[in-house]
Amino acid sequence: MSSDLKTTPLNTWHRQSGANMASFGGYDMPLWYDTGVKKEHLAVLESAGLFDTSHMACVKVTGPDALSLLQFCHTRELSGLKQGRCVYGAILNGKGHVIDDAIVYHMGPENFMVCVNAGMGGAVSSHLLEHKQSRTVTVEDLTDQVAKIDVQGRNSARILAKILHDPATVFGAMPYFSFKGHFLKGADQPVRLQDGTDVLISRSGYTGEFGFEIFVDPDRVVALWENLLAAGKEYGLIPCGLGARDSLRAGAGLPLSHQDIGERKFVNHPWMFALAMAEDGKGFTKDFLGKEALLDSADAPFTVPFVGENLRKVGAGPDTQVIDADGESIGMVLTCATDMGIGLHEGRILSIASPDLPEGFKAKGLSCGFLLADRQLQPGEKLVLRENKRKINVAVAENIRPHRTARLKITNFTG
Image 1: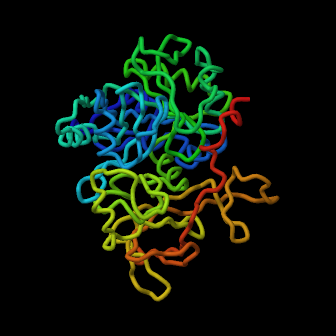
Image 2: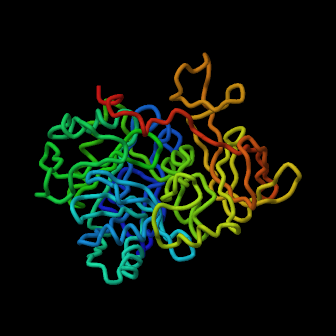
Image 3: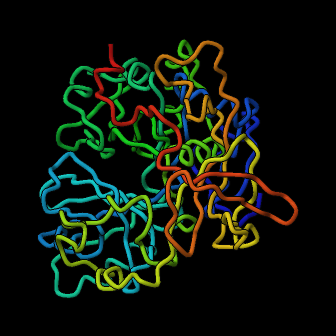
C-alpha cells in the first residue's frame, strides 16, 4: 500500500479478511472480497450487503445564513426541505460544471450537513467559503471525523432492528431520503444502538435498492460493522466492495461523480430531477451558481444510459467510441459495467427481483452504463460500442434494472 493513501477505520479489518484492495479517491479501499463481485452484487438484490463508505466526506454548514448559502451553491430547491429530510443534487461552478454531487441533510434550525465524495470535503468547503460573501455562516470540513457504513438490500431493516435500541420508533414514518438521529453523542432525538452508540441513520444509498446509510463516530465503526455482520448472518449478509457498488449503481442508473458528471454542463442527462426545474421545464425556481451557463446549453453534449445484449462489456473513456446506425462516431463511453442481476426475456429486461418471473428465467447479466453523445438519442436506438477491435451491441435505455426497491414503503421490509 502506498504511504500516500489514506485509510478508513475499517482498513485493518478489510485486509485481515482477504479483501482485494486498491486506490480510490485517495483511499485504500476494498474492491471485492473472496466472495467476488458477482456474489456481492447479487447479495444486495436477494437479501443484503454491507459497504464501508467512510472514505466519503461530510461538510457542516451552520448559522443564520446556512440555507441561503446552500440555496446558491446547490442545484436543488432547498427552501422547503424539512428537518429530518435530505436531498440529492450537485454543486456547480460558474461554467455550470460539476464540482461534486452532494446530498444535503437538514439537521436542525440553521444546521445542515453536506455529504460529498472521497477527497472532496476540502474542495467543497473551500468552494462554499469562496461564495460566503457577507452571509453569517460557518463551514466546517468533517473529513475523517465521521465514519459511514451502508447496509443495502431488502433485509436491511430486519438486520438493523436486531442491534437498534428502539427499532419500531426508528423505522416508524421513515420515507425515502429521510433520516433520524445524529452521530454526535448527546444530540437531540438520538438513535441509539443496543451497545449505547449514537448513530445517524439515513434511508438512502447508492445501489437503487432499499437500504440505509449509517453515520457514526469513527471510534465506534469497527464494532458497528462487526455487530451488523453478526446480526445479518441468518440473512446471508456479506461485506461488499467497490466493484459491486459500481455495478449496482450502474444498473440503477446512478452517476459516478467525476466520470458520468464532471467538467461539462450539468444538463441533457438522466438526472434532471437534481436541478430546481420550473414546472414548464424551461427555467429554474431559484438563482444558483452556474444557472446562466445551464440556460445556454446549446453546446452541451447528451449523457445517455444504455444496456447491452449480454454481459460482455468494453472499457470507458475516449478510446471507446459510440457508433450509430450509419457507422458514424458520435461520442464515447463514460461507464460500462455488468449488472449480474438482470437478463433479457422476449426483448424485455427482467431482474431477479421482478414479480412473476417466467418459468426457467435465469439472469445471466447485461452490460450497462452511460455514454456521452453529440446529439440526442431515443430509447431503443441501436448502437455499437467499439474499443480497438472489440465491439458490443447496445441499445439506448430509459431504465436499466427494473423493479428496484429503494423507493418502496418501509413497511414492505419491516414485517
